[in-house]
Image (cartoon, rainbow, N blue to C red; front, side, top):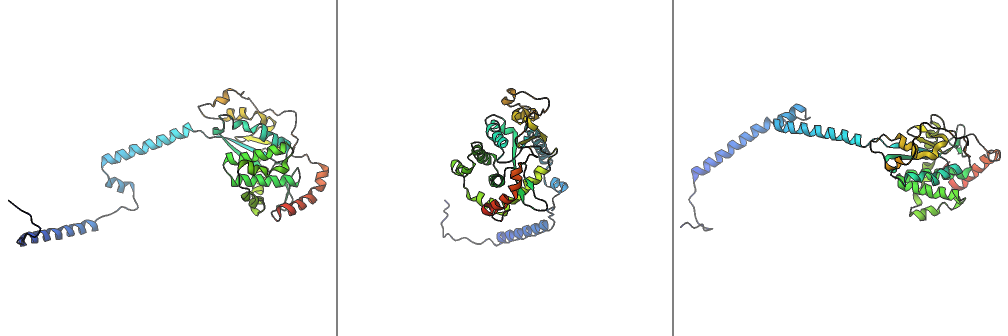
Length: 307
């Protein structure tokens, strides 16, 4: 019977120890030899990668890459580009506020919102003074102020759902002739007013408006009035109330939204005989005479040095 006691004495095997030591030395030499010949192949090249993997692995990786390439193409086909809607408007124009409050929300209450990219451009018929960065607005200094406020809202809350709710709230008050209550929208929508105040009281608000000025002035064809609605680069002129029809007509997807089966498709854009109340060239003589004085006073009292 063999017993393995903890303190059992054993005679040393000198020959066995010698063989083990020799094996260890040979192993170290072989490792040093293999390390000295190791070429990591950096930067990695197709040849170096092929040399590191077996033929079967190379075939698998090739098939995998082909699958992802096919999948990416399928994804791009199944998700065609969204229909772009650019709304050029001014905050105190009755037609602009009417469109925002009574017509634009239709895309949010249908299945069309996932297929559109909606952008607001609050500048309208404002004009830059010659050789300055100061500007005047069609409906007076108060409109310049609200254009800037909404530009700041778009910048601070880039999510469409967030800045649209704010714009809608303010424009609804414009429709009701209660625009002086516009700050109540912060409380209604649980929004922090401080970032907006900091924006329109700083150079940032002015920069945003000048950006929108450049974007509006670059329109081809130039806008004639507001609201000026552009769908995929094509202006709707005064047929903007049929926006849903134009969205459906412009959409390139294979799966037609259900809402598009309920609206008529249009062959061409046809301008109405009536004209917007906010024509680009329409100016009130009294306002034109008082504009400079009122603008300077308003900017000094409300916007400080922002303009």
